[in-house]
Length: 363
Image 1 (cartoon, rainbow, N blue to C red):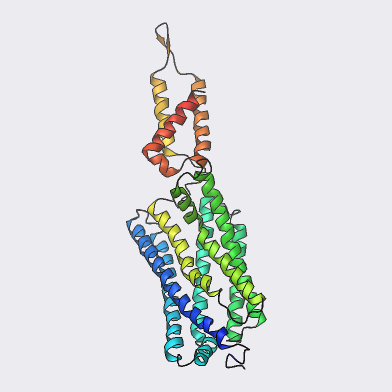
Image 2 (image 1 turned 180 degrees about the horizontal axis):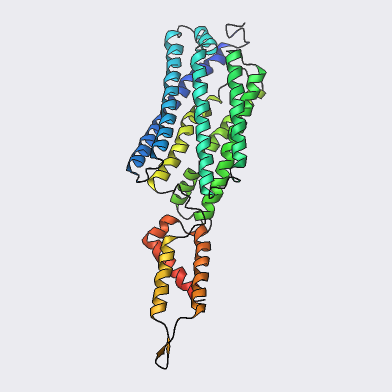
């Protein structure tokens, strides 16, 4: 078994950037974890202030586990950095030997925590798609199959990681590529479904005129989560299948993926619990309460202000009731795609619903 970088056919010029990359990636990991920590405590605040007590404990438990697992990954990574540069920093050969044959148990622990975090994050994305599309199981059938395949490939990846140890064979590489591919497939499908639903609900007809709408759509769809794993899969496949012995570019998206895996579902849960994105599905084809109340007030005014002929007050005709029913159905159809539940609760939503009601009744 080769023990020095000369045995691998490498020189000191090839090895030094790799050792430096480990320190840079550890600093990047800490920076991303700081962002995750801010998002995590903000989400906990919204959960504590939320009036919806049904899923409060579940949501708090999920994001707490994601943050604790990511914190453990940061701690184990910095323990490796300490051993690499302090305990084995006497020479470049000693640093390279620890980098290749170092803390195998710590690396496996990081791998297990990452796999569990990715599984939970994908599960939250699938749940959000299911809720957004009115709890239609047909919508999440394809992402669910990808998630099952992802879990199976993760089991094979762990098996080969335990059996091969520091020796990276072809089977381990292939299962890693399959695992990343299924992860990309799962979150890409969910991101596409959520993007389509978000833009259809509030973005397409308004033209995405404000940056706030764009940010909300990107957060709700977890676009950054899909983007980082696409970059991770591309870098990993390129560096391994081009027969590079030492990886460098792969580590940077890997370090970012640890925190983004926790940030993306935490942001979604924070939006749900803060009331900005209703967990019951504000995009489903449900009635808008403010519009219905407006129609009811209009109907009452029509009944009490019925027209009169020669001093005789006439009863409202059935055509008026038919028109009202048609107006209600038309408003439900238009409001389901164009008006958000929160806009209907605001003053602008009230004015918009009233104008639509008078316009439809005047047809």
